[in-house]
Length: 233
Image (cartoon, one colour):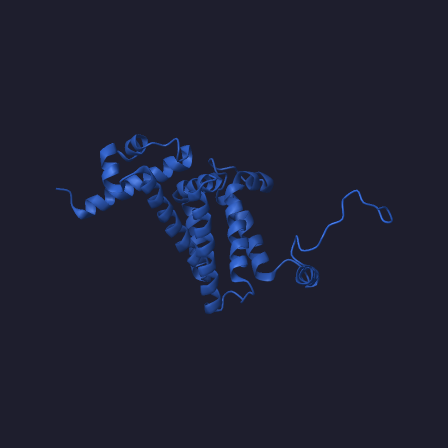
């Protein structure tokens, strides 16, 4: 009889194989049989552990989200950030399958893709809240909106990794295009913007705030026809 430890190891091996195939081939094209072959088990054992292909995908989502949540929480601590950067520079291949999986999931216009993005935003919100409490992140007026901005910026870099690497003159690594050299070139500029901001003063912020606070919501004011001219009925 298989031990509990062996079952957990087998389950993890199946899950990791599914992450590779779902990321590379897409959820609809990857099959239970192909996942089983990748993991070195029988299709029946995949069903035994996960019940269905949809449940297997959910397990993959949860695993990748746990990994990104752990990395995100580390980013809220300066020393842990240093260790995370060092680990990626030393072992970029350890992150490849998860990056590819995230890219595929976000490009999949489905409820699963929507749920994944929402979960990343919620994780980012938790990380910001923890940083504010720890004093490493300044307080903000709209925590949810800031979380959406930061999550969108981070995820867009994963989606545009190949283009970002090309623009920086860094090697385009793997199908996602994200490698250690791109990290070297982008980390300090990104942290500089997050630390010191970009604009020299508040004029842009003040101008936007003035418009948004005084202008009524779209649809509340009647619009003139595009071809209308002053003095013409």
